[in-house]
Image (tube, rainbow, N blue to C red; front, side, top):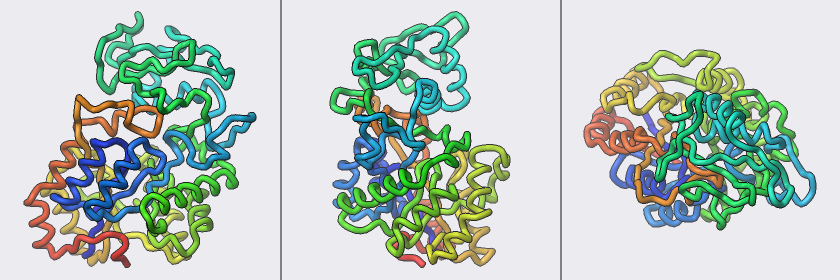
Length: 387
């Protein structure tokens, strides 16, 4: 069996870049997907070139700012269905991006009660002011501020339209007050993606593919999606139409691990599996776009061990599976790292700056895992080697 081990979120921050390169050079990672609107994208490209890491495009329609210039400016009242258009959407987006959906609701209630939403200095929209709030201290009575606090804390703008976060997440080098940004993962969860207009969508897909080619020096032959946006029927259709014969492969997470029970159908992951299996695989087949026969990597990596991964692979080999993609997200935690250079212009998220990312890196470098794959006669390849 051929196994592609693809590391997502290349370019998200320098610590993620370092972890992915380390997992490629010293572990089982065979390829990575790069986010071209991320703040550390240039660093990722340099490091990939140095170690000859194969790259695909991690299509990003949920976080940060669009690459397409006609969508990323607000010189007029331009607002597309891909982008935030109201203070309420802004508040919901950042609550979920930084704190996650469970704590996001608490955060949302908190800022409506205790914080201010005021016009920005350039009158380009509503500016949300959040000051040194920590999710662990959002109690009914209010919020206790702290000094240097970690990824649970987030701030945006003061009344003078100046970034006021402890870590200067929205820095002067990356002003974002007047720029529209993507609606976020919440758009996928709430079905807003069904309202995305195809004209804007195609422009952004094309521009991200063009940017990828300019950065890495070759055309985008493989594209997957940040927050799995590529499995959405309208996105997949426009991906195929825009890239044409250039697109050779994509990701379809249409199968699950034998080590875990399938996620609930009404959950985010359950919905992704359903979308991939109901239309995604067939759309790719009819367009002659390769997808691996099986897929692993949707589950909490802190629960995994090398033996559990090998058990999954063993089951696939026994079933005669010819190819599999294993999605991974290795990372590192460096308390000295400047978080203003993390993410896609809206600051870091909890997922990227979580201990699980380091545990995943450790797992991917485990010599026993690589040895076990060799014993199973599994060939580690990149998407350029398939089908």
